[in-house]
Length: 103
Image 1 (tube, rainbow, N blue to C red):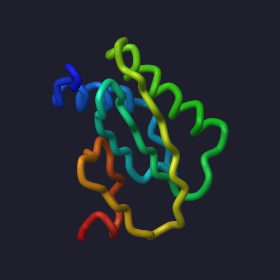
Image 2 (cartoon, rainbow, N blue to C red):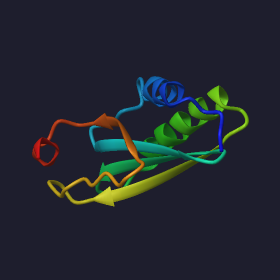
Image 3 (cartoon, helix red, strand yellow):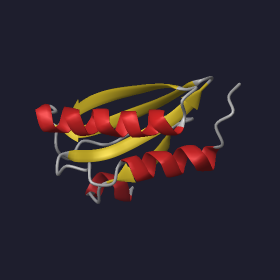
Image 4 (tube, rainbow, N blue to C red):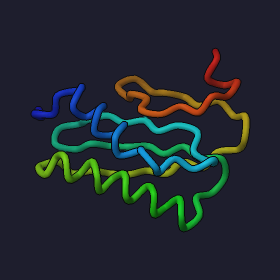
């Protein structure tokens, strides 16, 4: 069980993304499991150094909002125009406008 209100986590992740969204970022998803906040960063291709720095900054901002949480960041590399799947229990914090999101 955790004490993380869903609205607080959504606001934290959304705020942490300000100024950190690169052109290759397709989607950011998150979920809470126990005392963990897990985030997925779905990119076109492989993350470069700047993108990895931005992802780390987002994680650090979220961790600062929830000092009792363990914050995990996962980077998923995709090919352009591939479908983005949101699994049950995951929430979308950011979605780039693209054809796969219109379904």
